[in-house]
Length: 119
Image (cartoon, rainbow, N blue to C red):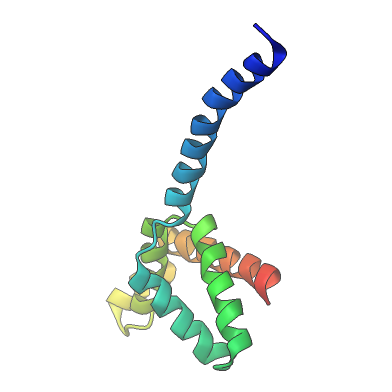
């Protein structure tokens, strides 16, 4: 067998494997539903001005957050943010819980990383 034939066989086996890895990684990064991404970008636009540049930066930001925080964990952090604003015992549980603080800290770290990368 010639060198060219060997290289062709290696490439023929390697390309599908590489493609599968890339697709699997893309699915992991893209596990956020479109509605969650849109809500994030809308909130980001309100906080950063509704300009074309802000659209680009906020779109980048949600992609970074999605790459760092699994969607289920993002939902937990968003729930903590929402419920911690409730007055009384129910809100207090979300403000003082170790699990709630952990989820919220993870989201805030991802948002800080997004700030560095995108803004």
